[in-house]
Amino acid sequence: MKLKLIYPRWEKLKGQTTFNLPPHGPVAFAATLPGDVEVSFTDENVEAIDFDEACDLVAISMMLSTQARRGWTIASEFRQRGKQVIFGGIATMLHAEETMEHADAVFLGESEGRVDELLKDWKEGTLKKVYNYMMRQPAIEAVGPARRDLYKRELYNHKGVQMVDLFHASRGCRFSCYPCAVSYLGGRIFRPRPMEKVIEELETIDNNRLFVVDNSLAQNKEWEKVLFKEMIPFKKKWISHTIEDDPEILDLAARAGAWYVYQAVYDTSDYIKERVKRYHDHGIGVEGTILLGLDNQTEDDIKRLVDFLLEIDLDLAEFTIMTPFPHTKGYDDLLRQGRIFDFDWNHYNAGQVVFQPKNMSADRLQELYDYAWESFYRDESQESKMFRLFCNVALREMNEGTYRPRNRALANHSFGKEVVRKTLTN
Image (cartoon, rainbow, N blue to C red):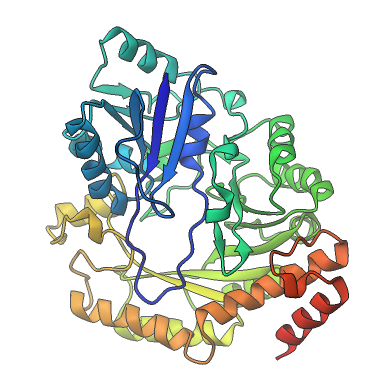
């Protein structure tokens, strides 16, 4: 059979540098399909969908709430052409009831070892409306390498720079942060993949740069140490969420190729300032992730926080507005309090206020969000700061002999080094 796999587009936030990473969810799902299924993949963020392409079944993989309405529209187009459509992915799980209205079937949960039942039912004409496996995660040993062969590589670059590949070494998260749905989606149990499986997948990835998309690497110190030691020989450069604040682990992470991390900045404490400094002391860049609109924040708190960010030498900052995604405590609290006034999922992009804040008007929070972006990047644009981070990693790769430039001007090793050094010192 031939399956058409689609990742719907979504509108990017105004004013931010726009680039598209190769999505991980669809190709992780594709890896769980039987060998006799021929897969055709379209990421609508980088190419148009051919609605007349020959296929037997359509699968739509949605990660973000802002993809939901577009996913439903795509399904309608295919169903009008007589095709059956199944949905899966994070946003499908968050918006399952609504998605059922636009689907022949919805698949909820992780797909390893579970897709055969759905395909059998489809072939026999007995497709169920819901396949719900959320309460029974598959054995983590069953997670194999993603189907990265489905990517059209030439579509994933930004101004000649190849985008990172996404990769994960674990699932689940033992934390349950207020605005986060991860504990609902993947459970509160940290599930590390067997290290031999991690190594197997790393060996299949040709890209020299990765985004390690684990919910947090700071879940088990001994596991982190083993992971980073195993990653050292691959000489890849990678981005991740938080790393454990431990000197030995930070040293191993740097040796393993840590490029920069996403680190939550939630207050103006000396701890945060020193936390950023410790990353930098190990040669690891920091992109601060800053959530605005929490109930404990006033307008003055937000302004002080922005000033603080300019003082602590962050490489990048990403500001988001508190967004009450379904199946989070934030959603439950705000819904119960009658403070959510916008249920258009297109607006649930972490850049638009959809609820009534506690200490200011919704309009004022939106203004402060814009103020934060404009203030942090007033003296140097986001794109310029990103390029500086790229130059840092390019210089490290040149010194190690692993640099693979797409830019002809940088192809000569000595000339390229000089260009990068001048950029970093200017």
